[in-house]
Amino acid sequence: MENNLLVLSYLIGSITFIVGLKMLGKPDSARKGNLVAAFGMAVAIFGTIFLYKTTDGKHLHNLEWIFGGLLLGSVIGTLAAKRVQMTAMPQMVSLFNGMGGACAMLISIIEFGHLGEILNAANTPTQEIMGGAMNELVQTIQAALMASMRIKLLIIFAGLIIGAISFAGSMIAWGKLDGKVKDYVLPAQQVVNIGLLLVILVLAGLFIAGTLSGAWVFYLVLALSLLYGVLFVLPIGGADMPVVISLLNSFTGVAAACGGFLYDNQVMLLGGILVGSAGTILTVVMCKAMNRSLTNVLIGNFGGNKTSGGGDAKTAQGTIKEVNAADAAMLMKYSKKVIIVPGYGLAVAQAQHTCHELEELLEKEGVEVKYAIHPVAGRMPGHMNVLLAESNVPYDKLLEMEEINPEFSTTDVVLVIGANDVVNPAARTDKDSPIYGMPILDVDNAQHIIVMKRGMNAGYAGIENELFFDPKTSMLFGDAKKTLLALVSEMKNS
Figure (cartoon, rainbow, N blue to C red):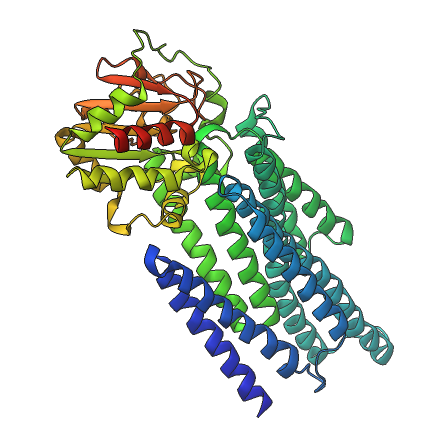
């Protein structure tokens, strides 16, 4: 009876994961989707705690430790989620990725210890009974046992390597996003990374095959995997970070799936597969959006080392034209169509509510207003969608790059708020630019472009933006929120 209830709890968990993931695909159902999946996770966790029995028919013990951990984690997670600013969401996602990888890594370490105990227990009686002489039956049993153990070793090493890389890489990604870790490129970085990865795989393969033995091999693989995670992310920078975060998220899912294999836990296995596959699909989509190669991502040869002003990229030249809030408001008020391009600067200034107010004022004047969302705007996929949804901007006004790009040529005014690299025409025109080939929002096709920006500093990719020198472009300098408030004020008073 209890076992049937346990299976039922896993079934409920699995179904809610799939339903929740499906609901996460749409902004208007994403919040409910998250709650549905969380409910399924809670059912599976409590089902395991109270209904699971070991092979000797005993329930889980150490309940005080289990509930203590659950309580502590819930308090920390709730406080972190409530206090985190929208601008710091990428860092928080990296931390969560890292914790998932660390859990998978610890599971592998613990299960490796258990495996050693099983092997010792299996070998000792055989030697005592047979006195060193192996008959055919014993050899067959031992061969079957070793084959089973090697499969388990394979899963343990997979969880260890992927979990360690995900943990170490996510911690470096968190440090870089938070400004605590700088980009650093080793001499022959690709060769070092590929060589290190090969050494890790060879050592693990030889241990699983029985050619190497001893716990030192296991812990050497662990140390090298952590080192690879650091070296893999360390040189990556600029606008490439969102793709790396997505990739590390998929690693965490795969590592969790390895834990599901180890414990023969269907819901853990399915959850890991869903996270791993969703993260992989997102990574591939983002690689296309950034015009990057997935192979280069895996060996740490992203564009980060080219985004610090290196190379022979052209230097944008020309005259900067400024505009004040009154003239900008007047220009938009007498337009037929305005497209707003939100970026990281909007998130930093927490100006989404003021932006929505401006949108409503323009629509009262009969102006058609839409938002253009680049796939990597705001340093994380979906960042801008969540930010604008928070201020009740209707979902049907948020258009993805492929939908909105054809509309710029029929747009009177584009208002760029704190976005930089995703509107830089150098991605189309300058082959030496680090962002060359990256699909961008074609805002330069509009009749007028107003760029809201604090100053002329380069964007996240560290390169100048030739859009600022376009004769159709006017710069509206200042903090995004204060400038938007000024625009709103001018709209109301004009």
